[in-house]
Length: 304
Image (cartoon, rainbow, N blue to C red; front, side, top):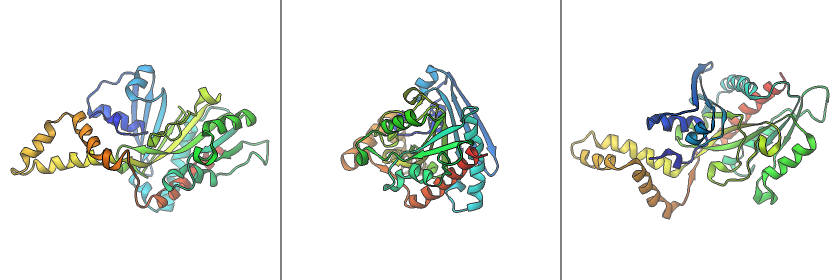
């Protein structure tokens, strides 16, 4: 199965897909590390257009912070993660910046899409105070159904008037794997496309469209139903092949081309469910915790 057909915004999952399929990746560098407190760091560097074509993502750097403990309600642990996040965010910010605009993308009234607005709610906004220090401003542009305008249009106008040195855009993402929901933070210096997580593509926010560097920060909060079914089928075949009675059925499923397996899943699901995306039942608590973790990390990085 071509995993690019399963919706994911995470560069690390595209890297895993290519590794699984034993493809040779040109123009892509992968670096991995473990940092306290129990945070797995993956850095994917897409160096050229060939790498961008294979990965399906723009040229740039993608940093992923992962830990199952992020989904737990542990205030001390999340404070430590905020420190790691702040360090990685500083790596991507341009040197010598003085003014910065934070854009909280998403819909405050839809829990799984409320990460961006919640982060902005917890930021230390300073642009209206002391103009001798770093000036931080924030905006929650809403969604088109609320404003009748593209988020990119609103942010472009604000950038033109306030002239920040850099924009940091926060948005909810889609993952390929269920275990990454609420336990992963991705940062990149390539900008972002609002709504792409659920296939609702809006105008891009990047240096080309805004005229200033755009750092993107996101947490996966949804996964496609097709991805869940595919992973379930994969686990089912493993169980079936352990029994003589059902091993032939497992062999039949495994004999199908991966593309055919996924196509079959889509054909079965689409008439009944459409392009459905699924979110955890405790998504309200997940978004609340991680929005605070990210906002604390941003406050550390911006006001160090």
